[in-house]
Length: 68
Image (tube, rainbow, N blue to C red):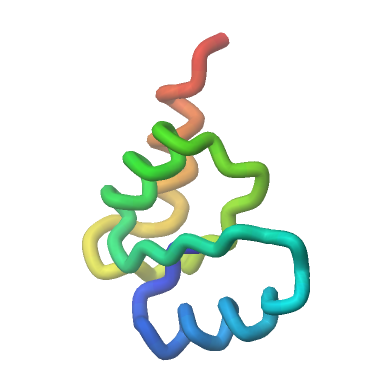
């Protein structure tokens, strides 16, 4: 997940407890792009208001980096 605050990240993490998932939290959009391209997650929970780039820019960068 990429959310701009630790508090919001903790809320999402608690909401996902009990599900068979691995939760990673990034606060910055550029780190999120790098992590997604490296780990290829099945699901991305994304805040549109991140400290460095918008969530929309994160999605666009991931899409541009995907092959084909």
